Image: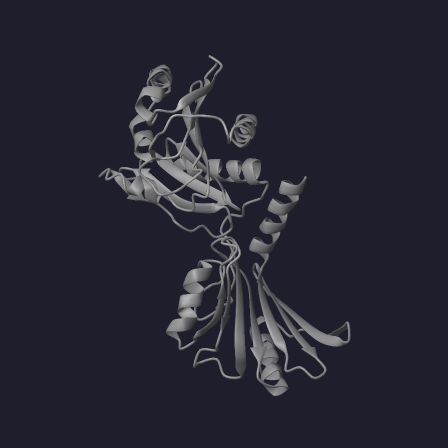
Length: 326
């Protein structure tokens, strides 16, 4: 199946300038596979329903279509490739490859009453974006994307979702997903792993913090600088970086060295006494709680900083970049 996905990606990227008929997203909901025997019917009717061009039909259970911009949206260069793969004795996989899809709202706007929202955030997987079920707990569309490249895959049962998600994430984006990573650390009262970075920023704001700067020039790497909330004494400034929907790191910058030392003592009490060591003329202390790492740093003439890092997001972003550059 991964070979089919990779070949489809190559086909989509190599045919960006190729002519194709206009289509609309809602037409895809009219050709959703329900059972294995649907394959021949779908292959024969997909072009007429969607207006997309057949790109490949090998007669062995795989077929794909290339679609041009949706005339009902303002998006441009909305090239889309969708395909079916028949798996004997199992059913039909449907996949949709496109650019810049960060949610499934275009399907929601089609007005189908049996579309139900699924999970919209999954700790441990930076590629996961959004999910829709067909009816209660029925077959689903799941969106995964990274750096603008997006894949929407269809699965017949809930039991297949996690397995397919991990398989597609590893095959399509070259990352190792984690199952339910955790930590005892709280930022503004929220787990920095279980909550998306936008909700964490909002939680700081609800506690009195103000956004001083915001950088969203690179959508997958949002950044904020915040004033401290009213209940975080001794902190001068907070910097938060995200990777896609996830917290990448949060840094506390302290008012004074004594404020820094007080927080070191608090972390020692919560996560075990750390050993202070020299590093490039500064001193550091390290703590770990689950998949969150904390590093306190103090340099001569500075007031000290405390960095919270989401190890899952760090590692998966590195894996994605390594796979992209390989």
